[in-house]
Length: 428
View 1 (cartoon, one colour):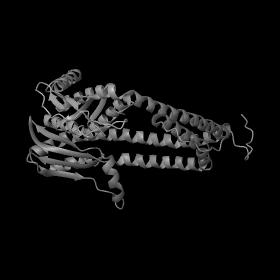
View 2: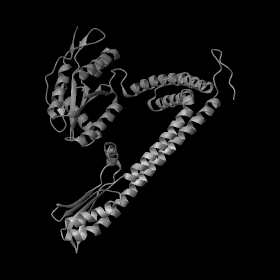
View 3: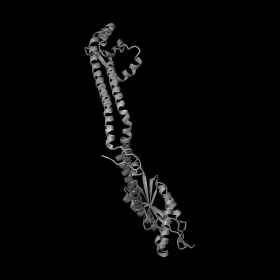
View 4: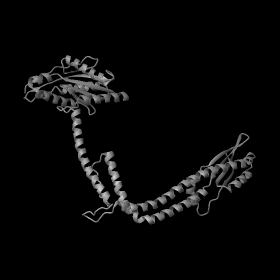
């Protein structure tokens, strides 16, 4: 495969040339890795063998020292330990009598001058100690503790490390000249491509771009990929804007900007589910305007819309940050109080909402009107066990409040609290 030189600079190397150089580097490095893996596997096998061998040695010592332990003959036990330990890979052998006192002990002497080097390796490669009870005629007369000596393991380790180091040195000498260029020319661009593709796929990071590469094919691939990302980013931005607009329209009322009935019902069902799990309360306030139809019919739709907009704003201003107010349709609103500490909180908020509506509303025609509210209150789980029944209970309570003349609140299952009447219309 040949690639014509770019107008802005010299001809870039082809991918085939770069791969030919990379093959030598990979082969040399593989030799060192194989040597390292084989050494590690050999160490694991030798350690397992050392553990098994320590167990066999402990069993042999057990039979040898049994008689001396029975007769509490410390010199004989010492000789028995030394007889076996001197010829086997034993680090320490200790015999305890039935009272837990040391009867005999043998410890392998350390090599002079190299103890500080051997100690760290012994802590890592020494098999765990073997502790075996000494039993004579069914009775435990003592205990034998034997620890292995990692001499053969350390010898193999040193030889393995030396072999691996030799392979690595040879590999480094052969691959040093080409490893850096191979990494920069092939591996790094491919890593950048994988990193950008991963960010786009998992994080939707359409703003990231690939840097230029030194190989013609990889550089062309990066430019095409960046161009594709430009298109994807533009489509993503347009799609997000359209989705956000559609989602807001689908969940909110266009006149008041409040959530609509569908959104309110979804939040209500979720709040009741959470309240059931956490043992909390949820309240629904069903709100209806007392004079909206009269104002809308007599003074026009613009005045009716003004009443709805002011009602929505005043109700929203009385609520907590965790509460939700929605327009259900027409002049009906609903408030979700979640979580609810007690029913008095619902009554208090309903009273604040009623009081806020007693100030006159300025209408487009220059007049002012007072449009009071009727509020029905229902609490989960006191008045209903699910969202539908709770909503209907609040609706029924609202009609009870309206039958009392409006500007009042009523709780499901209780008579409404009467409120004083106020002038329906105030001339400007």
